[in-house]
Image (cartoon, rainbow, N blue to C red; front, side):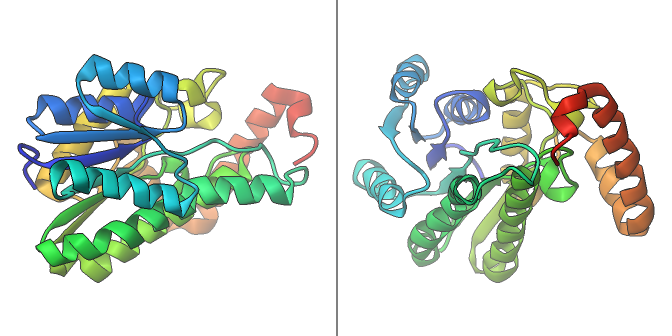
Length: 263
């Protein structure tokens, strides 16, 4: 799908990857870009900086996603691309993670994608075209040492995107899933853990990869090329891959010490 003259929504658009995507879309000639975020201060600042529209939105609440879609339709008359990008890191480990913590990250990292797809797909199918971009993570393809809730919800987000592509891909709906490792955002400000083993990239690199994937209608977006090799190893010998990850786990237990005592 070409980006020029398209109407686009980007959630989590106040900063980080979302802001970089919104700016890249604008520079590529998008006719309308609406960013959504809970952070209204940064959201308004970003909207002014790159000349897009902002709407404060809690993506975990379906009614607010519906309001976001309605706003774009009222402003632009249609939605061509919906980037469901908002996400959170959540609580670490497993044994001390409360049910409330699990529910919170599930609502943001999984249900937000479901709310978006459920409510924007009907009009995209009716207009005969549309594109969904779901931001997952390399953790969704592999795993993230020390973060059970993050790993599980990112895998679910990836699985949803795959299902949508299989189900609607022949009906005019494009789907891409963004799966980077460490990106220089607020989420990695205190370190990226195992996600940083192949280096930290800038949000703009993710944005460039997203635009290229949309234009090529490529499903999997892996700005860190090493991820493709890891996927291959995992698929070829799952037990060997798990053994390797256990060794990596051991190294991080040694490094972080007390943090790993209650896993």
